Amino acid sequence: QIELKHGSHRIGKRTDAVMQKWRGYGLGQFIHWGLYAIPGGEWNGKQYNGAAEWIRSWNGIPKSTYDSLIYKFNPVNFNAEEWAVTAKQMGARYVTITTKHHDGFCLWPSKYTRYTIANSPWKKDIMKPLVDAYDKQGIDVILYFSVMDWNHPGWRYDIKTKEDSIAFEGFKQFTRNQLLELLTLYPTAKGLWFDGTWDKSWIKQAAFADELETEMRKFRPGLIIGSRFRADENGKRHFDSNGVLMGDYEQGWERKIPNKIEDVHGNDWDCVMTVPENQWGYNKAWKGHIKTRNELLEMTAKCVSLGGNFVLNFGPQGDGAIRKEEKQLAAQIGDWMKTNSEAIYNCEYAGLEKQDWGYFTKKTGSDKLYMIVFNVPVSGALKVKLPANTSIGKSYLLAQPAQLLNAEEISGTEYFIHLKNTAAGNPFVVVLEPTAKK
Ligand SMILES: C#C[C@@H]1N[C@@H](C)[C@@H](O)[C@H]1O
Image: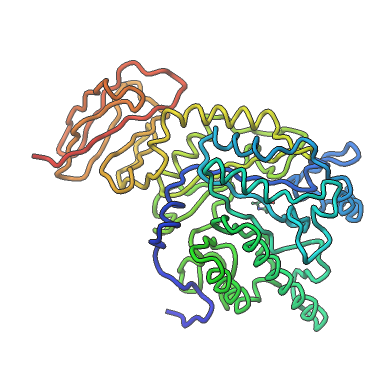
């Protein structure tokens, strides 16, 4: 056990109601929107090969030219209600929205920099209508905030000189001011999703970041902060020098999903995922492998089956409209969730041996089990292994509860659930109501 001043301040999951609600979300939406949506991954007809929201870091577009995009930001088709309704139709229970990405452009009228929406042709606050619209749909809001800020003169990748140190002190106060400003302006936001915290300059601020986290939690009791915000005094991120999770949930699952329960170390976590391979901001070229509805449903089921949430990214266009491909996916996912969300919302790791046909989830606070089936065996029989002294009371398709399925006991703890005709190509849910063995 290493003595730490700025390590994790809690061992084990939070047990308060706000975090319990977060744990049960199951499915969320990520929104990446800002100046980068205007070029949309290309400049002067040339494609940027990186992620569209990183185009400023490309030598294909002069930094000053990128920075002057603020004078072009006028999203005439922006409609907060439409975005929130799209998320509602998808079945998202929470949304994480970029208030400020790495380029430093603020979607709210921050008092601490001129590089904000207030000085764009749009002028008006973007965050307020978004927070209100999502709140109105009953979708909780998490504010994404990038500590790294390419626009601020005090930003440094590392602190090497006295000048660096003086400049970064100013940057730290600016960061604190903006965070308290966001919590003041948008009091219904449930949490902060930090990004851009991997550089040495920030990692060296263990004491400052620890103090700031404490101050924010005091300012907004119940605030949810992930493991990406701060490092301990030994530079350890996500997990401190004793291997204890920093923050309230693990934020390491960016475009990847844990494979087995041991990978999540008993912590809360969420996986944030792009539809294309690696595009968070709007990219004109809808290129490379685009994940299908079934792939995204399987990712959702896998995350919930391992005790996490799945957060799907949308990158609205520079004019404020959501691209049609993303709208279609939201509708397709929502269509499936209409029938099957009982197996996703307020569900958790079932503690059963993984089977090839798909994923188990368990309703929190109940014994009810769900089998989310993606691969029907040619035998039509789904294998289930239950704990000793447990048997299957009832089993049925969630979509047709009146139609009981035959659960054949193979051995003391193994069963075959015999399916009748099931529609190919469509994932479905079997419900198991276990009982104690007589
Ligand atoms: C790297 C990186 C960033 N982290 C993701 C959540 C996106 O914001 C991407 O730009």
